[in-house]
Length: 165
Image 1 (tube, rainbow, N blue to C red):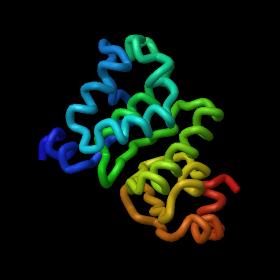
Image 2: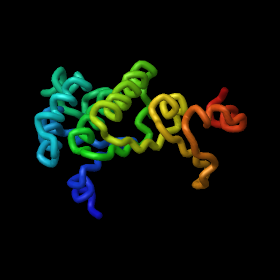
Image 3: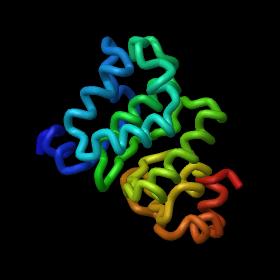
Image 4: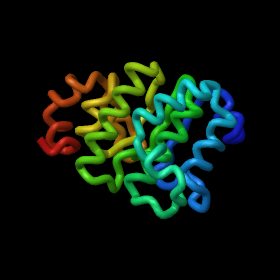
């Protein structure tokens, strides 16, 4: 399926890099996402609440935002389009610890309050354990283990190898 058809089905996607139109302003990026959003103004209110950047930097060219701000804008755009599912590819990659903490709070809110399912491909085990209901550990394309985060952290080999505990 082409990407626009998937978006119309209510699936939002946050790529590891990009996800914004760098030459447009923050506001213009948001307006484009609203054109395919099923939620319109209702979801825009949530996005404004979760991502201050949408209001504070609305007239700034998106490509001039910091890396963390660009990631948050990309997430805001995807959330506007997501009805049922939000797919995130390495959402915490390159983020400062304070931004990672904020990301975890935002993801939990999206899952809990907006009732949008999340599918994370993530290498930061602390983020995964904090946010996920189910974890699938994959190594070199092979499924190593699946379970609840509380079960995964109890497996010794996983604690050492993947979690550094």
